[in-house]
Length: 171
Image (cartoon, rainbow, N blue to C red; front, side, top):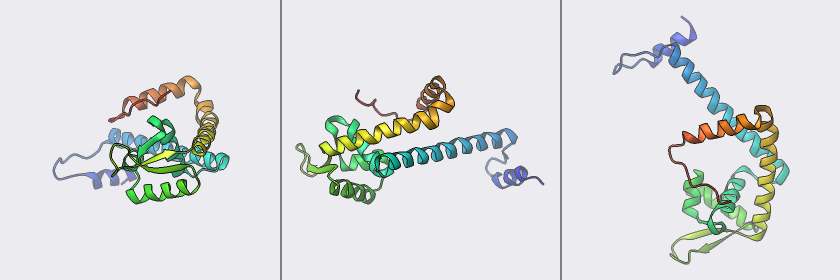
């Protein structure tokens, strides 16, 4: 019995009585290759940013989010939700960034119970340097091998599948 047949047998459910056929297995393998490849290239790109700008991936994500947010600030709970961090993880990254003088935490003028993370002038400078490092790494690792048109088309197609697209970044 081949590997695909064993997998298919394991995937059989009593409810459907259906077993994935070779087309289903090919589709699932392609999806796995896509998501694994995207995860690995993202890790490489963020490692490039760390190498060139000295910013850890989680810190860069926070700085980039704040750089593109209105007034370069956001509530801490919005940071956590948008970036997929836990509250404790967000606090840890914010503590590190505040300690480095890249963000400040301030009470929200509209609701004193809400704490805002706000980029400092140094934070803006570091975020811009890191963004340029990411742009360079993207050109080298992704755009050049694919071609600019293919990259744009891929970004548009994948973006069209986003079930909850956010607002475009201010330009």
